[in-house]
Image (cartoon, rainbow, N blue to C red; front, side, top):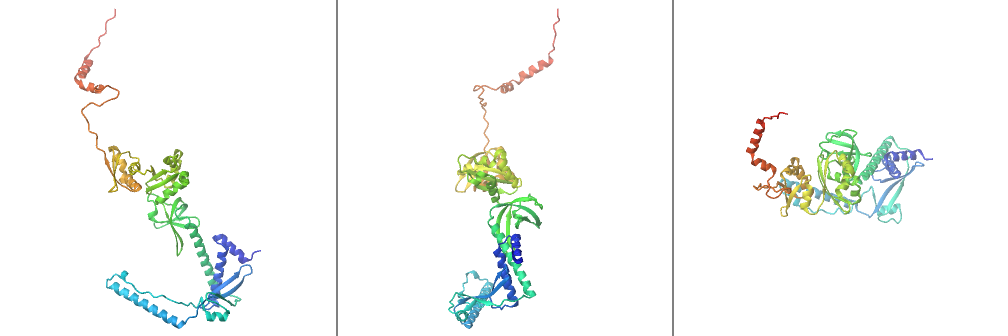
Length: 439
């Protein structure tokens, strides 16, 4: 049967998600700190071996063997080096006060040379007193007496060390777990707001949604489940900091990869994405498999696939564009839903001159220039949209394939004899109907 200490350690492992060795190492560090508090010396490097099953422990002073040094000479050289560094810092400050560029100033930095730390190092001559035949680089472990009991302050110190070590270990595990999730999409629950920052619960930790990563039209209420893109994971003084985003273009790419099997399997490739978060996105897709329709695959049967992506993005509109290596064709496609009449490429200026009919001009430009702006970002070309010249009217009657050439239509003939029509109308109104008598 496990000892009470082992049972407590296993419970901590289950609650915190830590390994048994991690908890054991925290206890060893805590016992070393407690021993140092009550019985240790400032120059001792305490190490403790602890057996959880029996609660027995061994205590050692651990040092590394180094070559013999003249401590007075080392101290003198260290003082000279510090004095020189202070002089250089003073010269730099004086030059800065004179307005000189201190970045161009160079100072000779001396090598620190030999250093001796009495806490972790022991000189060779002293080491051979403790262990015959000791060599430079050997580890000398000196047994220290095991106390019968620790004082109250030492116990408090041990408790603090255990808590700190466990927190550090937990932070490290969470950091490593979410570092692997960087660049992916996770589902989180809105926890609360702190000013303009939204905190999102990601199960094991909390992510941060900064104002620039939030969609302006969205309202993040406590308890709402949202899809978020993991933009950056870093380890700060308070633990792992996970920056999330709802506005990143990568969110659209990952959502397409997640929801559309052809994209995930490589049959359809997402070549480019341009996005104005919360309003509209344009996604350029290319079929790697010649038997696939890239746009149809992304839309899905009755639009089920694309609708799932739209819902996850909060109702954001998505334009699917078929990628083409010809920039003229790609630009024409990118201005959808507008119909383009002609595209002229000006290579020197990296400019595309686009012609559209008058009724398509506003559609091509979009509200506030959004459509042409997204198309320019998607293709990487500057786009200038203008209206095509109107076709000039001619005096000749139009040709109708249903009639012979030169033959006027019924409407034209009617317009040529207005006086005849007027006479007929007047006569019909004045006419009286006379009935013949019957025999």
